[in-house]
Every structure is written in structure tokens, then in C-alpha cells.
Length: 125
Image 1 (tube, rainbow, N blue to C red):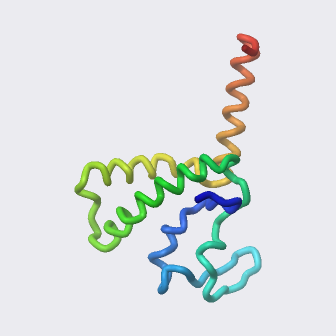
Image 2 (spheres, one colour):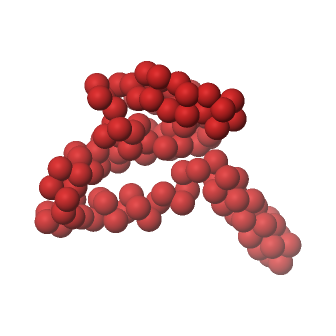
């Protein structure tokens, strides 16, 4: 289920660093402050960063499928032997460059430039 809070870094990344799966200790660089017991839900998100709830829902479904694969990699220290799990992992790693806000903005700017170039040569439909 999507919400206005869209995580740039998936929450399942943080769970191995959490004693209870819900909270972790962190250091806030901007405020130069240690925070004990910060909620995982409140980390690395922006409101509406992906633009549409549909895109966030797609990422969420993929993360739900991938989280147990990553957990198994951590516990076994081995890559997946099941081809489908290995494919999900590769697909997710390949898509990571789209997640950070800076990369999203860079990708959007690149697409804008590309479309402007195309339309300058062909005209709009």
C-alpha cells in the first residue's frame, strides 16, 4: 500500500541493523546528533518523490519479494541459488540508480533534454 511517504532507501535495508526490526540508532550529520531508537519508517523518505502512487506500489511489491532473498543472503553469506531469486536481485540492483532523489532529478532532466531534442527535429504529435 502506497502513502505520501516514499522511501528512497528501502526499509528492509535497515532491518539487519535493528535489534527489533522497527528501530535503530543513527547519527544525524546535518544536526551533528546521535539519535537512539529512531523509527525505520522515518528514515530516507521524501513526500511524493516518485510522482505517482503506482510507481511506489510497484517498488513496494518488488521490495516485498526481494526482502527475504536479501535476508537469506545475509544469513547464508551466499548468493541465491534459485534462478528467479537471482534474477530479482539483479533486477533490483540494476534499478537502484533510479532511487536516490538526485538520480531521479538527473534522469528526469535527461529525459526532458532528450524529448526537447526529438521534438525540435520532428515536432510534437
